[in-house]
Amino acid sequence: MEKINLFCLPFAGGSKYSYRLFEENLPSFLNLVPLEYPGRGSRMSEPLKEDVDQLVPDLYAQIESRLEQSPYAIYGHSMGGLMAYLLTRKIIENGKTPPLHLFITGTPGPAASSRTERKRHLMDKQTFIEEVRSLNGSPDEILQNNELLEYIEPILRADFKVSENYNYLREGMLNIPMTVITGTGENMKQEEIHLWQKETNMTVDFRRMPGHHFFIFKYPYEIIQIIAKKLVVHYKSYQL
Image 1 (cartoon, helix red, strand yellow):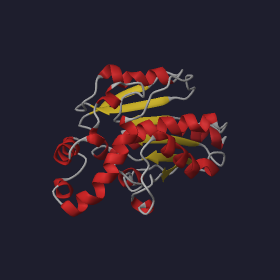
Image 2 (tube, rainbow, N blue to C red):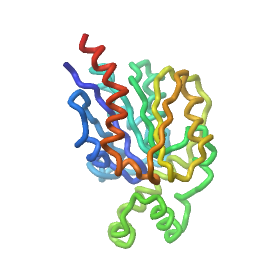
Image 3 (cartoon, helix red, strand yellow):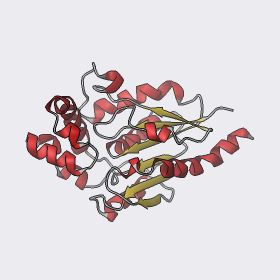
């Protein structure tokens, strides 16, 4: 029996290796497929993409050939959550089979005004470093190492620019179940998190986990369990 593919989109500054802890906790019926943004990891030699009109078609091209081969779901954290949503829109727009489920962590709804209020990609170097430090996702060993910072700073600025310059367009409601998980210590308003409900006809499953923005690294097992429980029903139905 074919496994369900779980396409995973990285957060700002991340790569296809960002979800290794998730992969270690996968049940046997799931196949984790991490996508890679240009300009880092295995695509380091390629130019960075700085807006959604460049990045979404790139992501779509990575998975297009697999969309009709087996059932799949899409997951993304932070910037990856926005990309997961936009990629889903692109898939439907192109007449392909939509995902079984959309899993989002660490980001408010696409319509949230806070997404574009802070222009981190335009900050001076020191302010930018402090901003990245406040997210608790980059160790001080990196932020205090000029050589490593030289590598990661342009990637982060490009990724922040993608999210911060995104212009929300109200479109038709999706007919896809969604699960949205955020950290209790994240700096985002509940009403902006609940804007995800504006994007689907189905009732969104909103959940909270202890921790700040990168709570996903503390709870990879728990997050994968949530995903697995949502998808196992589909897997069993495909087995019939």
